[in-house]
Picture 1 (spheres, rainbow, N blue to C red):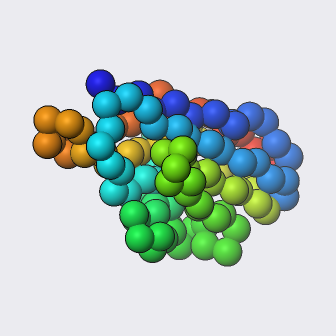
Picture 2: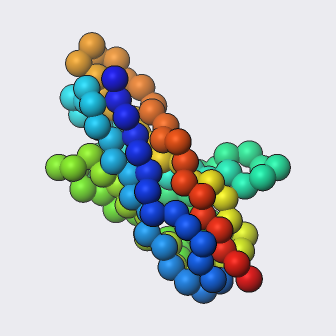
Length: 120
């Protein structure tokens, strides 16, 4: 069993910063990619940023230059540093982890989500 736990959300004023963290634990042989998605009320869940095992990153156009994703491979942890936040960044942010389990299966695991609210 694999657990994915996010932390670091909260309320911030527009222009401010927040740092999200996500730790994966449990029966994990290896992790290939980790990433952050978000879902605002009435919207579909969308990819915010991802980082592959080799360190290649990918960002949504709406966050490029403002958000930075990073990873601590030893801790199976991924971070999302968010700066210059805008009200439209308000959403529930979900961590996604692609993990290989001892059974040889590779699955995507989701966290429970953390709320980010940006006040104007």
